[in-house]
Length: 375
Image (cartoon, rainbow, N blue to C red):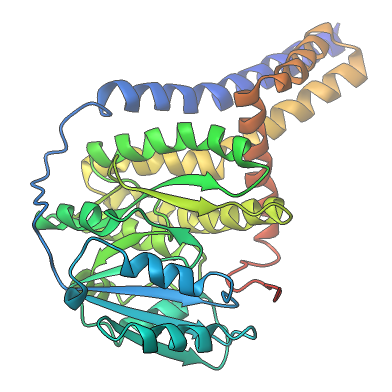
């Protein structure tokens, strides 16, 4: 009788953990969508606001993309005399700096600077190096392989007309991969939350494909953090913690090339960086403005703890099934396996596995400067 009682408790605990795991993000999504997604921004935008800007492109073996990215910036519907471009190259071995120089020689009506680093120390180190030379009031980070629509700068900068907006990022459309469908399913949930969080106050997750910051706030914070990977998200969160808004507008979209062959490790590396970001932010939740505190607490839980609730629940159910042949455990596991045929569920489970593997991999390496082959 004792064994049966213990197994009954084990099944109950396992199912409870599973309900918390799936219920928390679903309730959070429902709450943010119904309460905040359709509410006014309470931000005074001005489409004619045109500050001087510095666009920083950190590169490492980006020969395939650098000139197309520079062309993409050149084609922006924004005055060229107000744009400064800084390409900061971290010891590329594929001729990226030379290609950037060639492009600059053909486009002398726009200010482009090239900074060469002799050693690769990570993206944030390169950004801080470029920041020392930035002359714009707004500093914009751009990935070399991200494609902006022609109105991206105008859409991003109009929000800075409100002095309480400290940082602006983008939504992402995955392109160029056989795994596009998987990424798109994830983004539908993800992008809705970014907009809703931004309307509520601020979002703690930014994207390096296009992330804009007030330079005076970057200077006040001491630049980008060099000891964690999510320099964009962590910097935006620090800006929100000191009372400014860090937002992702609903109409600012950027195309992101999703790798095919290295997709799995690409996802793991990104998950590692977000975990580092939220682990660092954990101790600051109580300091956050009231409107931001709840957002930060839930997102921290979802990234750091929630994946392990699923893992613990699965282990308990397997143990219960093997040791006592529990029909409850067997049927619950069978349901979980059957649900893998549902696209959204399968995508969610994949994301949880990425977070678990990433948190374990962080014990070995933070992946701040990873290897990148020359093709």
